[in-house]
Length: 509
Ligand SMILES: [Zn+2]
Ligand SMILES: [Zn+2]
Image (tube, rainbow, N blue to C red; front, side, top):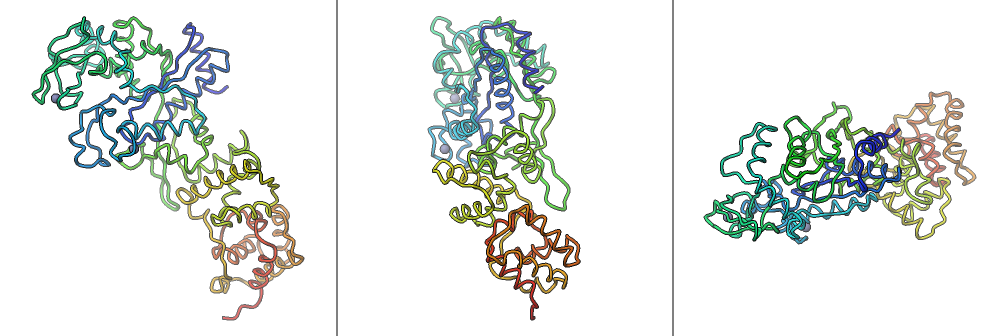
């Protein structure tokens, strides 16, 4: 049984509600990366399991757009120092292309979710606050300030300062949401008066004039949106952590049962250069070990990215290695789960496509030719061509960004004379015999070549590894390469005949 089904069954048994709400949420303070994606994939998978069981359920995502900018990250220009402390929704886009800082990082992520076919209702925290949805919970929090202070102390051991308020006003002079102190409140007018570090005094409305402290905000949000299930990083689940305090605030202050928690382990980025030891690091923007979701989706089909994450139970960490291990996962997916792409694109295994695109060198008409030559039936409808182009782009990008050197090759236009000097006479005999096979101008299929290579090695009285080496040398100017059958079947018979004839003949230095 898939883990998501087990969780869904457990939830339905434990909590009887008319409608389940699976909530996810990420702060868009920088590129939203593959590590962040786990929360959404877990939510989506559990949501799908519930729906499959016939349970009424929604999947929602709240972008924490009203959170302050914590510090000037290294990718920000120096003048962004002045924006530290302001809500992300109120800061201009540092790249100038979106309506706010928050949107700049949120939008590509939302587009990625769309690409992955994840249907999710989107909320932005700043809009929730501005629309007044939080007003009642803000009132309750301000009235029960002392209880909140006590709960936070009991759960986390942290003593809040005497002037602490669960509500952080947004200063209308300096724009920060982190520096004003609440002086008084007026429940009828739904506002607080405040004094800011910048010297300003003013009033802040419960409808967008500030936000709840994050541990209080989380619990308030559960009630406001009717959240019954929430996946979150395991750090929040630590004893005394934000889930513990959220649970108590939810029941004791808001009279609402906290959601069923699904804590999950991190995704670690594993990189390994050939011939070196693997390096593992948690995904972090500041250490450069972060892969934004929209970037990885240029190199990996969306169903694969989902598979990489959903195949692992939430309580196990994932060591994400986008190089060879990812390719192996793609093989596994295509073997056991389904085709990637429709029409002919789905019929060509990704690994095979890596050979075809390298033979075609980024030229699409050439790729079509190579594909047909390799034995695939292409109907050439617009839809089919588009699908092939899309999958080919993934293959090309993956090769460029993540492929180890051993998987890359360049078909040699000219006979690599120098390198061929090193071939043995047996290898040359074998190559001459290979040339005979395509003499009539008809190429063999990949599996025919595969059998033929073994046969010709025996005929030339050499080891199979030697014949492979001869083939790769003659075509790629290196001793190894992709599956030889695939490579040979993708090439023009006449070209192969000439190349092997020349490589097998006496070479004068
Ligand atoms: Zn932008
Ligand atoms: Zn101020």
